[in-house]
Image (tube, rainbow, N blue to C red):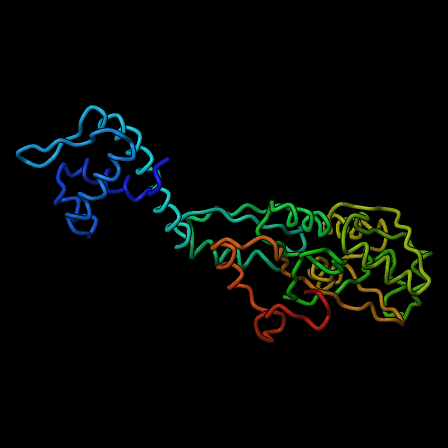
Length: 310
C-alpha cells in the first residue's frame, strides 16, 4: 500500500487534466509539487505512469491500468464527501425515533410536522413501542432517540430530559354514574371492573406501583394494548378505564365519560426525551431535538435533572 494517499489524488488529477500545469491549478499547489508527487508514486509502484507529449502528458499502459482502479475509488470518495455534506446540511438522511402511541399522538407529532416542513428530504422512521421496548431499541442503537413516559427505571447510559407533565386518571361511563362526584377511597378500585394497559408498559407499571404502595391490588378484567381501546371499552360500559387523561378528554368534555375522584391524588409523571450517551446523535436527530422545548419552558436541558432522570 502506498504510504501517502495524496500521491493518488495528484495522479488522478494529472491523468484527468493530461497536464501537470492544469493539475497544479486544479489542486492549488505548485507544478514542481505535482511533478514530485508523480515521481514519488512511480518509485513506490515501480512503474512509469506518464509520458510527455507536445500537449502535456498521457498515461502509459501501466498508468492506464492503475488509473482504471484509482478513478473509481476517487469518484466514490468524492461522492461520499458530497453525501456527507448533504447529510450534515440535512439535505438527505434518515432519522429513527422510538415512541409509544401515547407519546407520539399527544406530544411528538407536532414537532415531526415542523421538522418535515423544514427538512422534507430527511426520511423519518418511527418505531412504535411501549417505553421498555423503546429503551431496548435505544441501547441496541436501532433508534437515534426516544420519547417515552416515566417511570424509566435505572438503565445504563440512558439520558432523559423531561418535556411534558402528564396525568393518569380513572374514567367511567353512565353505568357507573353513582360514583360521579363522590370522593372515593382507592380501596374501592378492587371492587370495580377495571380496564387497563398490558403489564409491559410504563403506564401500567406506574399505576401498579402507586396502588400497591396504598395497599391496593389492581386486577383488571380487560388488559388492552392501546389506550384508545381502553376508552372505547369504557364508553361501552365494560368497566372503569385507567388512561392518560388526554385520551379521554373529548368524552370527559362531552359528558359521555366522567373522572373518578379519590381521597389520594395520583401523582403526575412525565414524558421524557431519552438518548444514549454512548451513541452520538446524527445531525438530523440533533436538529429535531432543537425543536423540542424543555418542560414548562424552564430552559434547555444541560445534562442534569433534580429528579434523577439524567
